[in-house]
Picture (cartoon, rainbow, N blue to C red):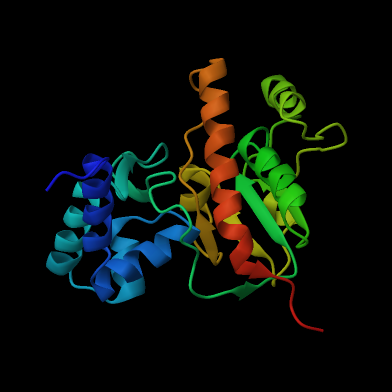
Length: 226
């Protein structure tokens, strides 16, 4: 058989095959909204360790899921969807939220950019906060926002304790914040801190990752019905 683009067809077929199991599809549905450690996935989905490991192996081989080590607790790893590996696939269930709060450690880069991207995409209000807020927004974040047409001119850093409301949807956009918010119901996006390397490429990668995740999550979140 001679089919043009057979390598692309093969890749697509492998992804479809990997999704052809209810357990693996449940894993993908959960990771569409945010990252999770294997232990967190197992608890949420009720999957035994050996079965979860089998499903994750097939999803990784298909290029759908990848692992990265936590920047907070280095003993932990987080599972995340490979960007654009499932383009066109959206979460099965919608979730109401009156407001979304993006949280990172210093509230100086990732959470600020995420809130600005969200405000440009969704009608659900958004804000940001930090577990250890910095005095101000990082200058590189301000420059990055300007390049991409985002307005952070009037944004300020705030502590999470002075920001969260009981009915907020919280999204932790860094590992350390996720691990510190132990008693808060939240989603998690494991996005590396671009300040650690300080390069333009690191800031652009963080922006691209956030933009992809906002586009993925926004269709699943809607304002509560009056």
